[in-house]
Length: 356
Image (cartoon, rainbow, N blue to C red; front, top):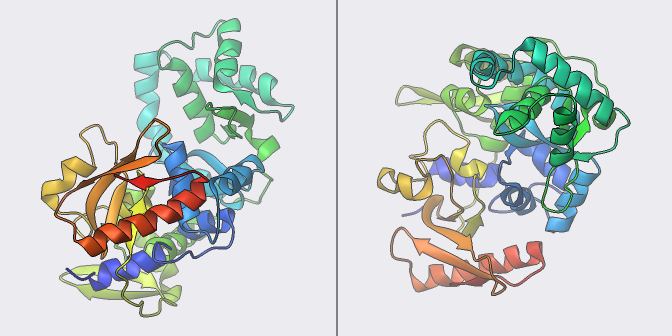
């Protein structure tokens, strides 16, 4: 089945058909945010959209602070361009905190007084600007008499990140480090709420359109009312079309894209699959559980003509295999396209990738 006009436009706006950025930070900025709870998957999500980028290039951009990994919305880790971190957190994080405050106080004993103690302990640990590994921060909390066992330490870090007090820094081996927010992210004047809403709608549609207000509300974690207001504020710079009772918003500069028969290997949690309220444009409903598990984990996918046709997974050994599990029969031409797509991933990783 040929790509629909909707998926064809999205493939181009996402930078999947061809990269839309010259640097990793520019690619992240173009998408507004890139979901990143799977660290290595997020590197490929950025590299896929960046001309000639390697995994090393993306990690170096993170190490320089050009890209910041934190929890701006929905309580989920994302990559953000450095200049966007402050206003996005200010706009979206309070809604997550309001939803979580009573639960973490009840289930983990993290009331306002305890969290204030945590803030003082971690500020002393991080105020010099040097990154510290998560385990080292847990040790500081324990030394101060604040138990970090179980999920308690993680909830502390998550809460302080939502308060724009800490964020993740460069990786230390396989472990994340954390840095004091003000020492890592340059100061910037706060945005008025209407300006932040307008900017968010513009950036989301730029990287994800065509999309609806319901898509923006789901992606951002904001209310439907806020999503509608954001798109109305951004409307002078957007195009809109109403079909079947739904209004679709697109970038006003979106040219008619050319059809492409290319095969694309997308990472786990890619924005093309998860950046919308409804996934029926790209995924057959009967295959949803094979792609998006009951635990919320989203598999790496193979996309052809805008639709998910398979999942894939790299083996943990040294063979460099990408094991593909088709959701339908693949033609010989599509299998050849898989191998071509694997070569692109191979260049990004700097190691062999063989389709199995």
